Length: 227
Image 1 (cartoon, rainbow, N blue to C red):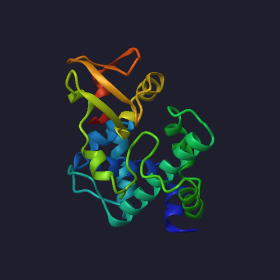
Image 2 (cartoon, rainbow, N blue to C red):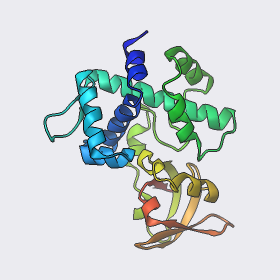
Image 3 (cartoon, rainbow, N blue to C red):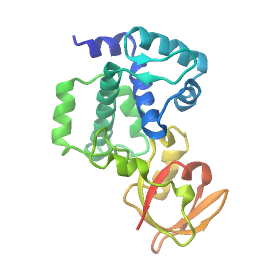
Image 4 (cartoon, helix red, strand yellow):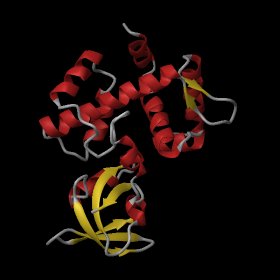
């Protein structure tokens, strides 16, 4: 049994903690306890306890009350978990026709259960996808920087034509986000015209389609590019 497998078997939550730290650092440059707690929907005391365990296992570094940093071993395991997660989402959505808006939760359940060999097999069979089904880049993907730098829909201007690129990982954690996007077709690759941009909502319209009022709270987690 590999070291990574032992860690995930004895402390299953390590997968979500490490991958969340990696994603927070990727989007914001650093991770702090309070942001990690909010991201994962747990208490700061739970975060403190978990980080203590991860630090003992050599997966994170953190001076008292300072930012959380992944060690090389922690980053390696975080990337492995994220790739497994994204591949499982693709398997569920593209091969098994599982609902797009429910695939994230199911992948979290399964990501600790598959082997490296199966993950490599899935990667090849799925054509080496560069993003998850929600548009977030695989770690190290060629388009990673572009997708991470994409402006958020909350900054779009009235009259602008937009191409949806991603629903951020943080946004996926908002309970209503993926069901809303699924219902209204606000997915990577979809094109809209911004009919109204205000402090409470961004109103979109597809060609020959109805208008869609996207709450500002959700729009801040939708990446796009001008089209």
